[in-house]
Length: 368
Image (cartoon, rainbow, N blue to C red; front, side, top):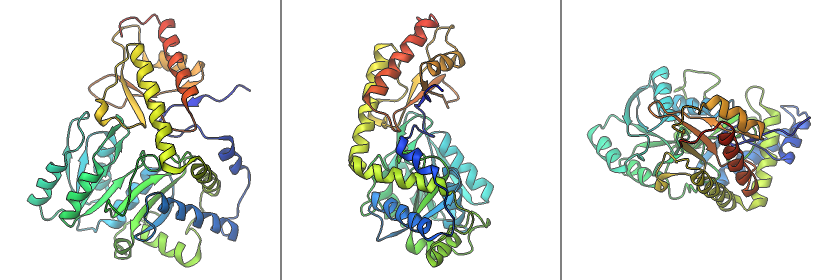
């Protein structure tokens, strides 16, 4: 059996053998040992953003989007209204969630190469007192752009509104401190920068906001208030938990701490990103974003102009050399994406650039 390819994607990610090994044991969902594992995971997740005193961790079965929808459904009252900040596909998904849930919302779109402007958020909140919440994508995975969380959080707090942060692609790698950044909810998942496997989302919900949220959700399974109340009372999940995913995340968090926590994870991803950007530039491939707003999570590149470049062919050639890339997610420009996250380091990033170079040569692509 050949080695599995390295996943240079925004998730699922390449994981360590130790993380995968943790999934080889079966767990009883009501067993005391599993309940202890769940409690440990939640405690560690709160600790990463210094939120233990102010927030509750509510784990949820499903992908990160499940947790995003649960946060909106639970924490935004049915008569509430959300200012949705959009500069990519996942901001658009936030707006779609509000629409499906029947929550009033105001979408604010900016260009995909421009971070959301805190001054504009300030103006919009001042102009519309009916807005109760602001929803922000911290790192917009469709491009890799980093939005100014600290500045926006200050504005939202000054207006006394609730901030809901989709930190799916930033949690655990980019600094967020709940003692300095006020938020009502922060949402992430197991299969991103924590380097676990997909299957568990979680919401770090402000304690008072969560306590006041009873009856908001129209869904039984996506009711974070009910999920947390049951977990706090019994130590158990309401419904069958993804036991193997939780065990893998627990193992991944142990490795996270042993590596050096957020600072070390951030430094490794930054170095991966630097190697990728410099290596691709030597091939003539241009990054989509200005360096000032490029997060070290995933990089979007302009596709070569050469008519011989076809992404599907390119993808398969790079995959044959051991690397999985990601298609672009922009509507106006042809692009592809390369992730910097997961259990990978400089050796794999240099090899990935070499694989891209060889694939382009084999395709006879010269007009980059």
